[in-house]
Image 1: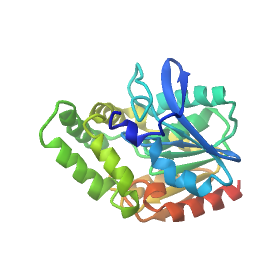
Image 2: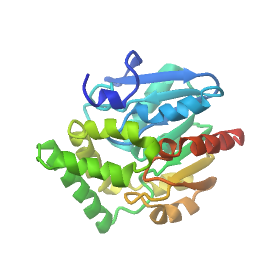
Image 3: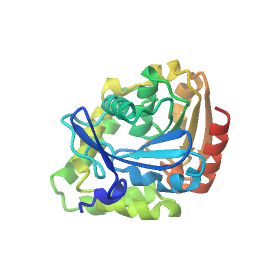
Image 4: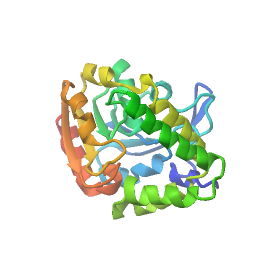
Length: 276
């Protein structure tokens, strides 16, 4: 088993081929569909705590993006637009209509992109990308991250320790996330190429999804990690204020409230879903 497989959905999960890409998908629970979309370098395993807490009322569908977890490689690099395209094909094959989408980081950006063109019951966005202007400063910031992951891709000796510190102290510092955090760190070198390509894309003008967000009609709950240094809420608030039906809850943590504060997040999710 590759290290990235341990980050994704369980062994034996169904495999669906969408536009030539083999996607690993886990389904559990009963009720209205909740589709979970993970961050770059992560996997469907991120949402195990959520599935354990809401599976009595909802069907939770967890997906490994291409080149992540147990899914196959894609012919194109990672981007919100490509992920939204694959999501549309997957949900069509599964005959799932109007799901609640839970998306983190690039998964949140993909959720917004999907919801622009398809009906959803609601969006739960956890520190999503796409809510700031891609100006020179943002482009430089993304370029630095791309260079960091490029070093991992070429096998820099120091990358493993640096990637581990990055996750322990910045991305997922909360104790509740430690098991999945260890898996993500262990897969860091294997995922360096995907991370590099994604960060190159984040620095391009097309990564700006503020107009997409402002046009959304679906109810949106932002569940933001208070200490996120990569996608800080303060930079994204103007875009959130321009949205039609958005509310924000702030949780302790670095990037993924559903992993770092699973009980509080599940309670907030249930309250949001009850209002849909």
